[in-house]
Image 1 (cartoon, rainbow, N blue to C red):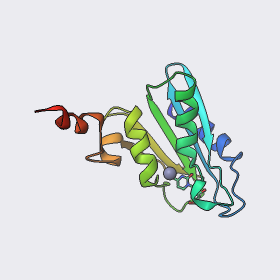
Image 2 (image 1 turned 60 degrees about the vertical axis):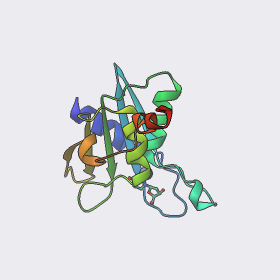
Image 3 (image 1 turned 120 degrees about the horizontal axis):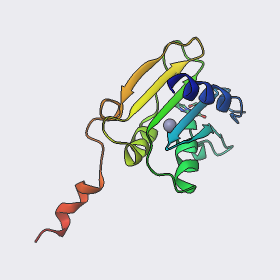
Length: 134
Ligand SMILES: O=c1ccn([C@H]2C[C@H](O)[C@@H](CO)O2)c(=O)[nH]1
Ligand SMILES: [Zn+2]
């Protein structure tokens, strides 16, 4: 399971569109029996870049698969790749606190994280409940 997900992320990375940074990232999300791949997609207007993690998550959600069971992320980093803050928040929307996140690099240096560890105190839907109290 783990090795397959990482291999899918490695394959996804090959599709990265990175004319500006040259930094290729791949991700793979498992939901039910399916795996969705994602790569980073940059833009001449740099801020519009979509990270690999969010590409994979949005592909899954747009196909109706909202329950992320595991995700792998890979890049050519010295140690395991570290997802950006935006992706951590987006992940938290579709992961449980104990969902496993495999962070790795091309040398197979892999760490197993949980959602809670990746973004402690993530902003959640319940955080908006208070405004309905009178
Ligand atoms: O976890 C990460 C970190 C960075 N990037 C992308 C965004 C941009 O295209 C490039 C450099 O930041 O890497 C990702 O896709 N995922
Ligand atoms: Zn990101």
